[in-house]
Image (tube, rainbow, N blue to C red; front, top):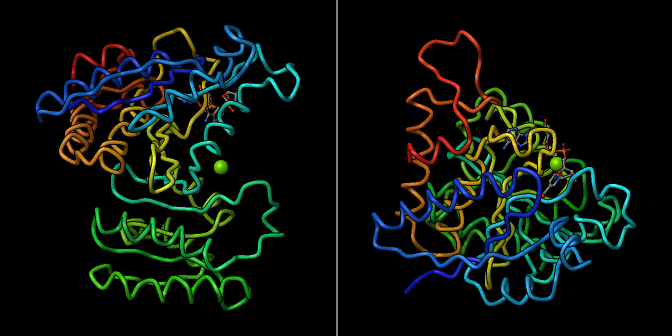
Length: 322
Ligand code: NAI
Ligand code: MG
């Protein structure tokens, strides 16, 4: 039976990178006997132009009826002056909240390690009181993900100084008893910031609160070299998750066929691992990305003039090498 994917190309480079990613996904699926059915819908600026709304009802209905949502990016200069309620970002925020996608997963070094952070909507971080169930909810997602990876989880907090972090640590430690197969470690956030640069391979899955996660994942993104390499997922644990690159719609390079589609492809790989239960397709997609890099093929954002054994390629050209 085919996996039903709600495909949202969105704006800017979105359609260009989505085209490469769906081709790669279909090809990887064929080799593993998995089929994908793509249901294309509008979101963001493209949806505003066509319907007046950044998240039309039809898009939301399709997303809710799907097994997973694959989203490229939204936004662009054209809609920057529009009133708040009809801006492209509204579509993104609304689909995340409608699908209750509270856990944000950000693999940092492709494809080796992940930073999980909890999203507490509509609250300033300084006001956040960690209610036990909120901590347990994000920690459970992290333990489950660690189980699917290398069975190592590092919980990052600041319990020597912050009282809320003490509750965090207690809840995570207690939940760890349910996961005896996962090796749980604890680290203070300042040390984690240092170790991430000094010894990034130490980490596999990291679980932390929203503010720490935002800072650490931006730091970690630089280890990967380019925004164009970084996938992410927003998931609820049940119901369809949303899989999308960390980067935006890159209007400065849209329509030129020079965007890096790897973040989009790796987002599709996350979708296969975390939502569709076809880890072999995920492995193939990640291997395809590694192979393209090993062969020296580079889109502009990761190409350096004069660097040996590399060649600059177009976005669409990459689909011929998958
Ligand atoms: P951006 O991520 O779109 O671009 C930042 C820089 O990185 C640009 O120079 C761009 O060319 C480059 N870049 C990004 N992705 C790339 C890729 N795949 N390959 C090669 N180069 C890439 O962020 P920016 O410029 O701040 O925002 C542009 C638009 O995107 C805005 O309208 C913003 O609201 C929207 N945006 C949407 C997001 C989403 O859909 N989740 C997230 C961030 C921004
Ligand atoms: Mg950030």
